[in-house]
Amino acid sequence: MDFLKPESVYNLANIREDLIRMEDTIIFNLIERSDFPTMPSIYDNESSEIKIPNFDGSFLDWIFQQQEIIESQVRRYQSPDQYPFYPKIIKESFLPTIKYPKVLANYFREININDEIKKIYITKMIPRVAKYDGEQGENYGSAATMDISVLQSLSRRIHFGMFVAEAKFQADRELYTKLIKNNDIDGIEKNITNSAVEEKILKRLIQKAKAYGTDPTADAQTASKVHPEAVVGIYKDWVIPLTKKVEVEYLLRRLEDKEF
Amino acid sequence: MDFLKPESVYNLANIREDLIRMEDTIIFNLIERSDFPTMPSIYDNESSEIKIPNFDGSFLDWIFQQQEIIESQVRRYQSPDQYPFYPKIIKESFLPTIKYPKVLANYFREININDEIKKIYITKMIPRVAKYDGEQGENYGSAATMDISVLQSLSRRIHFGMFVAEAKFQADRELYTKLIKNNDIDGIEKNITNSAVEEKILKRLIQKAKAYGTDPTADAQTASKVHPEAVVGIYKDWVIPLTKKVEVEYLLRRLEDKEF
Image (spheres, each protein chain N blue to C red):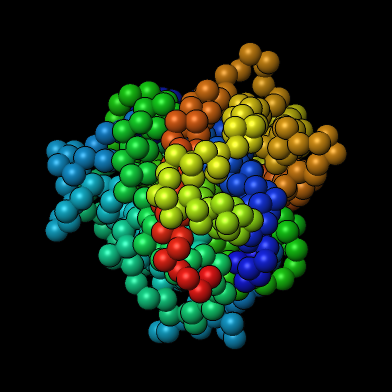
């Protein structure tokens, strides 16, 4: 899938291939984060352990904002699959703007559920993957850096829902136009849901988490570095539902862009 | 291994366990980098594709320096296993300094071969792992970000040689003192080399690169995302020799620190 070639973007097989590749990235990142404890101080705006001068936010927010400032300057958020967590602080790039052809409806930049992703990640996912519940002051920076990698890979996966939604809309304009006009959210959800594909994803994730999380040369009984069930749970409980949420949000507004 | 507990640092079994865990990180990072082409413009100080205002260096240098400025502020380079690539530009942290106990001889911060690692990575390793030889302008930032992850994981692995060297010195002070006094580099190299362990590393890497680089649910004939031979070659040709170089550099000066 190549954003400079719109025809490649509306092909569900291409989208699925990219989504499958993203599973690897998400699992690698979860494995790396699982090497550290939960470290609640990193996420606490009022932490007594970590004081950041002249900054209103958590330790993670501080590093993440600095990183988005850098990455925005190298065009990260020009790409239609990248959505900032701190859209108010990002900067212009010093590089020439990339002229991406139109691949999504004109309001697509208004759909950004990163705040929700971050909240769920911190409160729900970290406790499932972290090595143990506790602090490790000398690794605050390392853990937060891995958090950013996990969050960025989750955000990309979830906002990819817009490409799925657009491909589905284009494949059956009549059906979706009717559902959207009737504000039929249940009908939209039903039509974008493919339970067989979802089952396949969850089965694949168990296998991948085991394969990537275990040293293949170690004793057979070695535990995976990340619990395969935790990875599956993260997809089942949040990644898949949040992707659908993005798809529905995108589709509900789809008739706004009459030219497309 | 815990740098706050020096006795855990001089234990070769602990060091090896950490080195084995680092293999995973290095392979994950190489797999992610292999998703992009070589992109020579990223590394070219005089690139006609990428112009950075008021900056003398490559595109990778620019992002990497920005990142080291951030990471230095969250204490990355206080940790005895972290060495900056741009030591002149790093900043003080706003967090309290971590009081690491002494775990290496007092000159250890003077040993830093990151320039050499970066040069070899760009000229030798990228051509071995990249998807194909060419540019992909819209992914300059993504590829450079992965480069930083690879380089940081390689640097940590290679500079870990100092812990190996210190553990070996402490295990046989008499032998190493004699070799160092005679400036017997060959003798030092011979004594720090364990060919059986090296063979084991290379065999493990083949298995790991296959396991982590292949979707376990895909058809049996699917190729690994990174060539397992490339990973083995990177270790054999550079990671292991450069780690030994660090060990020898460290040991040759070891008698300077008479108190330790």
